[in-house]
Length: 105
Length: 201
Image (cartoon, rainbow over all chains, first blue to last red; front, side, top):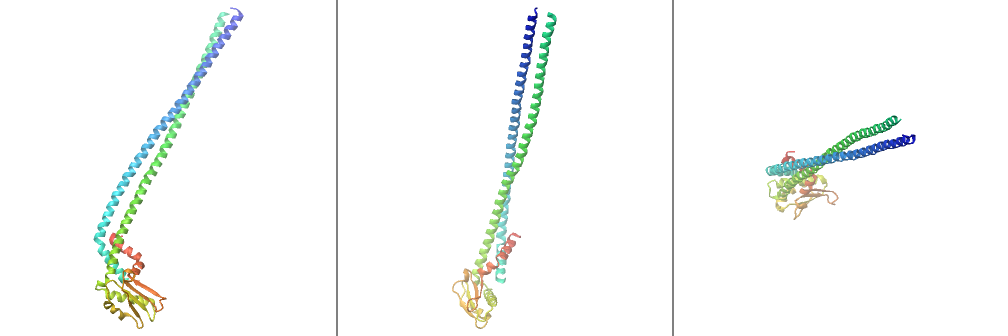
């Protein structure tokens, strides 16, 4: 092999080596780029799951509060009923006492 | 020479492959780091969102409950007020019909005496007016009046419910002792008395 052929072969080999390295760099860039997409997907999944949990938390809180509100209505109804009964039973006494106060006071 | 050239060829390619492998390894390591950081960041964002959701839920709960509790308190107050007003209605009815009661004479005398004393005049003018009363059953009033007093019998009940109004001769000093006026003067005591009698408060 002549000296020129040898140099040509080395130049070819170096070109081949550069391609190998360049291809690896492109591949590495692709891998990193895919990872960024995957990372964004992970973020979206986590946020979407958290968002669902948030809606559930709010739904449960609202339902619980509405149940407590209904209970408050029931208790209030009972209280009003008791007041009406008391008023019926004590009305005459209250009128008499008020009259005493006005006439005597 | 050919042999050493082959070795050089192989060496160059082998170095390139090593460098390529290293590049891929580094990329893989960076990927691991990117994913780990992304997971951590996503978890943090999700945790923040959930913490905020819990506060939001508590605010929703409080808002629903407090507006209900407020509305129910108002209902209770309205009902209590209605009951008290109903009792006051009964009281007014009794007062306007007091002329039929056995204590009428004594009550009128006392009201007149109070009013005259309050006016403190030598020539007081006393106006009387009760539903269903006649001049005859009010005549006893003149017994408690000082000399020089003037007694006026009104046809209609004074202030709507009946009562007594005394003034000096010039009408500069007036003491209104009508039932309506007494109800107004005793308003706060009356409400307390009625509420405590009915509701035990």
